[in-house]
Length: 98
Image (cartoon, rainbow, N blue to C red; front, side, top):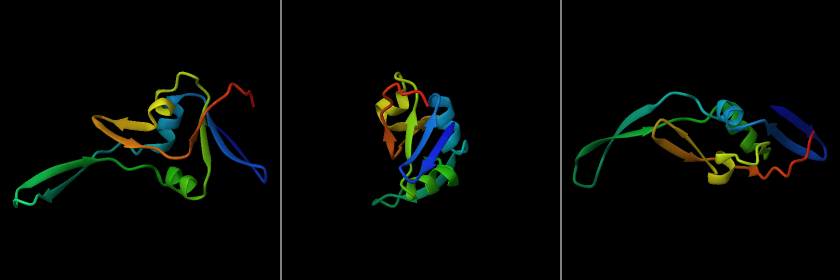
């Protein structure tokens, strides 16, 4: 991961999907219970993003995965087990070497 952060740019570069995934996903499933309109209890499964990722999104940082075949960029989502969540602030990589 490269962090380019000066007054003209606010971009973090990742070499591949795995690097970005490790940066943004906390690898734990969270299970909670909710009740539907009929009073039936059911389980809800989710995961969290890392504090660092959330902070960067809040600060307006952009993320570039330097892989033109990136599935995360293509889908704009990350998955943990069978749970999928959208990611923010992804920008396309145009093959510019830093």
